[in-house]
Amino acid sequence: MSEAGSESGERLVGLFLELASLPSPTGGERLVADYLKERLGRTGLMVVEGPPVGEGSQAAGNLYCHIPPSAEGTPILFSAHMDTVVSEPGAMPEPLVEGGIIKSGSRAVLGADDKAAIAAMVLAVERVLEEGRTHAGIELLFTVCEESGLRGAKASSMESIAAECGFCMDCTGKVGGIVVRSPSQKTIRARFSGRAAHAGVEPEKGRSAIRAAAAAIAAMELGRLDDDTTANIGTIKGGDAINVVPASCEIEGEARSHDPDRLEEVVGAMMGAINLAAAQEGVDVETVVVDEFSGFDFRSGGQPLELAARAVKRLGLEPSYISTGGGSDVNVLNLKGLKCVNLAIGMEKLHSPDEFIAVESLVQAHRLLMEIITEAAG
Image (cartoon, rainbow, N blue to C red; front, top):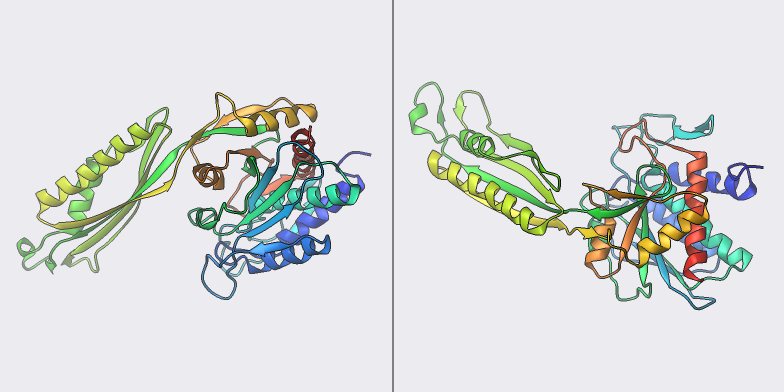
């Protein structure tokens, strides 16, 4: 019998399907949070919920759970996020299994990002307790609002965390992939304020905020700037009518780099372009720069990387080391002092109705967690 067809494999798939059937758009994770509290509570574990991070009746807080150690070793933390991107209006989750693939039967996202990780984590803890497996202490952190700026992880408290290192499972690609490098990101927002005037009667009396924004963007170096650095302007909003010189315009963009000094240089250049364009066009401008997350680099090694690599090899796989341009809860947890790596779990075509995960990948992801637990207690 294959792992996917085993009793634990079938149980894992069933658990994931239950989670995936619960809508949990970012900021509205209540159903999933309640499900996890009830399910983990059945094992006798206490699940602590933090203050809500989103807004509204379906908002929830981060969930935290601690399993005391049964042996000496390295206490570890597993983390995953409960929210998904927002699906198309009116689309409800309908997960189904077809030909060994778990996919969405509707226009809603499947939610393997990141409920596949949640399922793998929950079953791992259930099996450890049911089978009396030796472990050095396991903590679970289920965050909210990851898809809307890592807000849950940013709101998390490390005061109760006993783990020496952590593992998130929030990366696309084959099981065995380990994210060892991620950039820092800053968001830039600028609001240009000019003067409105009739565009056909007296345009010379106006000061175009859109023209200033366009000049600023045109002066920026955008796209991939080097192997470590990217920059982008993603939104522009302004104007009220085609016959009015626009008095306001807002732009929003970002810069990312694996090199903190280079990131500061790029952001400085973007801000310089904004301020110069505003001055040349005779408009006012207000700017905000936000530190979204800080990068990490485990290419030279580190406890979570070494544990994960040994666990991957115990599965009969070769670790692959990933340098990504994206950010995740891992960035925040590292910044808060808990050394973490991100693990690939086989989910594909994320953030779309075409998202899927192979049953075999889901099972491998679960097995990887079991091996990490074993290695940590070794």
